[in-house]
Amino acid sequence: MPELPEVESVRLGLQAHVRGAKIVRALQFHPRALSSESIAPLASLDDCKITNVQRRGKFLWLVMDKKPLVLVAHLGMSGQFRIEDVGQARHPHCRARYRDWE
Image (cartoon, rainbow, N blue to C red):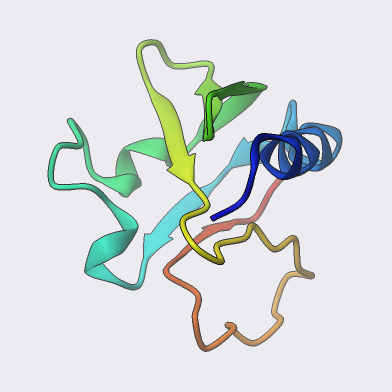
């Protein structure tokens, strides 16, 4: 499981790449990509703009412009966020994809 400094490094990298970006479409490929306690499906992030990337403990919070929506992520044992070119083949362990950043 990543330690706090590693989670903070991921947060800083995400903030540099996705803060201010718009999620045109959010896709879920695996049932574990979304907690059963979530209040909304990933598709509710469609057309949301990421206003900030925060960390609370070992959880990453991607704050959206549509209040109260926020994407909360945990890296788990070996999780990662991958920033890829549009059209790149999906990684075999990819559980969700947020497409067409603007």
